Image 1: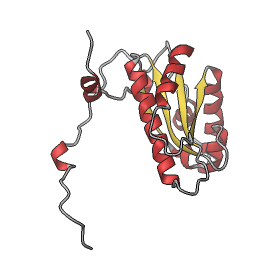
Image 2: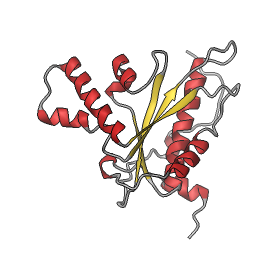
Image 3: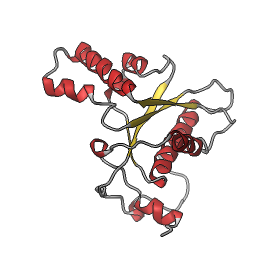
Length: 194
């Protein structure tokens, strides 16, 4: 059965990361997902974002390094807390980091480049779902930690837009409450006065 694009978008949900299993998308599917991710508004055609693939044993190594970093920040970790950090990137078979790699430009503001990266991340999630995979876009403490970003392969000037966890999902994702459209939209009625 073919679903319209609008119906697909109206029912899109994030899958729980812990329930994303093998198989992961194939290399060709990953390439398709990334091609979709790059088809976003990009003023100046700067491509102010990039992607990092975390798969295979690299996911386990990242967890080891993040657990060590968490211990540096927080002191000795409980076994449960250590396990939480060790499995940050190995719960799903594929994690794709979406990185803000902003460029210097005299006319295009940095915030606009960051928003382009957010659009790339959303397109990535949507493409994964359209290919039949579950996906979940998160950040976490290591996104705001300079050493955490270095561990994850970012340069000092780059920032995390998000980590998209992707895998096969067989459940029915919980649909969180969504805002009533009427409560978040208005017609313009003139300049706002302070």
